[in-house]
Length: 191
Image (cartoon, rainbow, N blue to C red; front, side, top):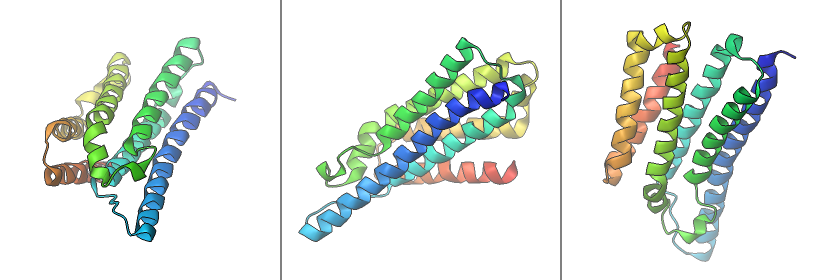
């Protein structure tokens, strides 16, 4: 087993649990919706929370892909294992916050979105900053930061996340989340 395989096993386990958390949250929300329909009660999943879940999943996949790109530089050490565990744990926390534990406690999950969006986006920005710092500190990876296309895509990502953190209008948040998702789809098609 190579150093990368050893470290990646921990990384992929924690990121995989993050994906399970997102999908489990969606499942709980759907169950709450079905139960509300059965009781003739009111419960709406809305658009904002599911869009946030899709964005977090795409963001998570991008970091998973980045780990593959840096595999030649990965060595096993206590510092690397702690950094990987911290990084992936922050992703798990962000994923955990996307859907509420008890969605039936909300009439509409858009309310939940507005409660957690700044925390989730803030965590994702912190992870992006950590990744950019890692790239900047590696002589082989640092030149990639100045490549015009990745630089532009990163600046667009940061601008859209910042806007989504602070814009209060529901419709504008739907637009921003859609643009964040589209940005990843375009980035995946380019790479």
